[in-house]
Image (cartoon, rainbow, N blue to C red):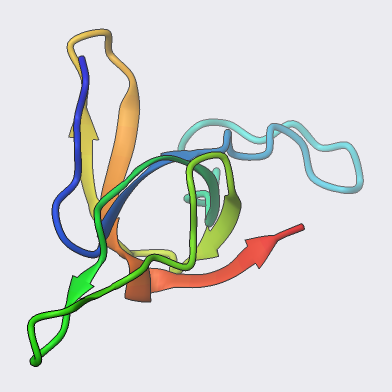
Length: 96
């Protein structure tokens, strides 16, 4: 399925939650924290400004980003892949 976000929205594929703690304890699914890092798979054209021009996006497809724990709206593709749609403003940082 091909999804094209509109405006200043992006589509992010969250990275998998940690399976083990730093000490080596295996975590069950009920205890795993929601991931806050992901890879951008699609971006919109940019934010429409009051003067009618479009502000270019700072992020691009392929960037690894950090975002807020409860940011975005979760969607599922026909293939069963879990993705997030969020505004560019919800991105806290780009991981280099």
